[in-house]
Length: 193
Image (cartoon, rainbow, N blue to C red; front, side, top):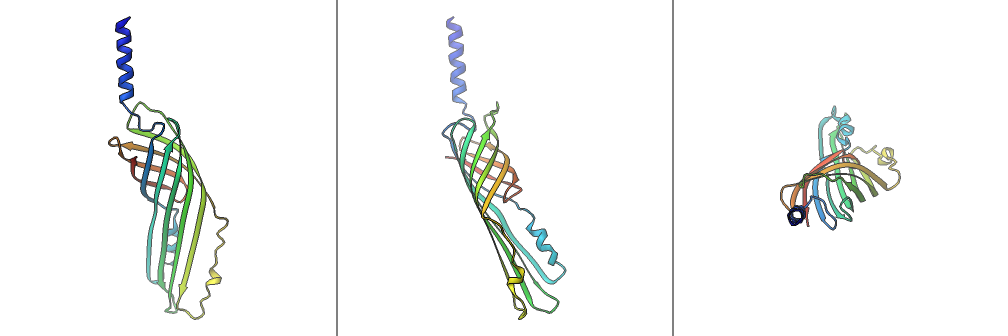
């Protein structure tokens, strides 16, 4: 009987020493970069114009998550992207366009338990604020920016995502997510605080 108790106590000690990648009261901070929703393709419609030049940044994101249990986490995320183009029209006037998006979301995620203590797969949703802005400019005297107004709807935003973290050490790792939101996919670094 003593041998069985000794073996059980050693087993329990080993299990407690091997921390899982996601445990109750853990805090994570993530910073990443992603692939957007195709604004570049939208702006490529002007590529036939002289001097066409596309520029873009993002979506870049930062997020925080707190583990409420070994399976559920809540947090917040902020994402930003900006895409634009410049060109010269057939009448030799300069035109430019810039589309900017800011997203601030509350997020919740379910984390799956695995035998691998370094890998943390999860699925989640986000709800919050989504702001689109655009800016048309031209030197053309007949240009009227109001003719290019875009209906942007409500400032309500949402996202669905599937992702995973891989911890290289107790406090530093990498993550990747795919889904619907400001980015179709994003990846970056994660830090356990």
